[in-house]
Length: 392
Ligand code: BEZ
Image 1 (cartoon, helix red, strand yellow):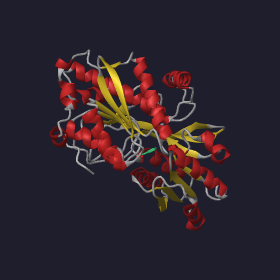
Image 2: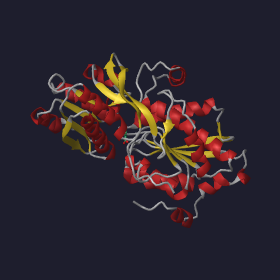
Image 3: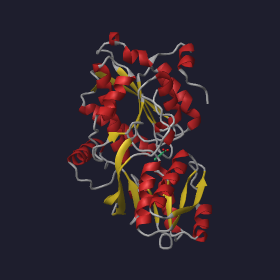
Image 4: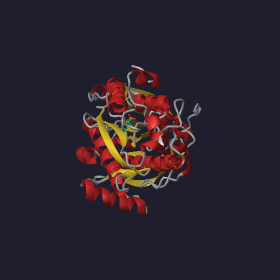
């Protein structure tokens, strides 16, 4: 992966975004460019669209301004392709001269954004990708997440499954950070209730030939199967699982991404599936009720967790930029403002951990009639357990 260090960018005669954020001389009349790198094509396209739509919605609520400056969003389709990530990020910083970053969905792609943010001290809000390193060993003052660590939702699912009396379970997923780290969370959740994860089955991202994996499941001697898939892959997996006749033999569950935003396409195959996530349908707090109504009327779609994370990314960016302006604009003040805030999220208010990851409730949900209905709490005020975050 080509280095995206500050020195490389400067040597190429490119912009110095931090300096721009830090220079009062730029003035409140200069538009603030925010690079929004998300998948708008491929298996995660719908996730990227929801995030972008809700980010935009909050920006409109703010009258188009953050930190006193008119915001100009520069969108890039990252295609969920890690190989293209460094050049996509370099384009935003060098060609487009953005001063802050929002992105992305895929845990592999996000690493280029994290590296750029660390190297150049440019504010980054991650509105989905759960790669644990971003808020563990690679944590940085400029890097925040409005979503989750891959470990969190799956930990909640494992814990809830053990509480139901399951003793042995398997995990099926794509073989990349999101799938593997979710499996670690599922294992830890199971263990917290005296159960075990006895097998992990994987296939490469974003492949959807699930048959060879499904064929192995009945022979594993497990009581239940957990899975991480999302977007188009999740639609296919849930349908194939049901079509293989496994639903009655081996209860299927997962991180909530398995059924989030895709229930319509999954149809009857998803009915009754239990999943765990930091959001769900039917959360009856005033913020969520208002958010869902506004999103529905603006976008003409029901909100999902991706929309919530996009909305909260905009809230966090605005809070950080406001703080940076007030204190003469460095990432230190950007970070201090977000850390001091309670984010008024549709999922329920949350704070950020010292490593900048949400501390949040993980809900247990059940798919019924096209909704992921909240039926209980899988884990209360859950923080990612990561150690190794050394802020510099
Ligand atoms: C990830 O790659 O981190 C991810 C993608 C989709 C849903 C959840 C996590």
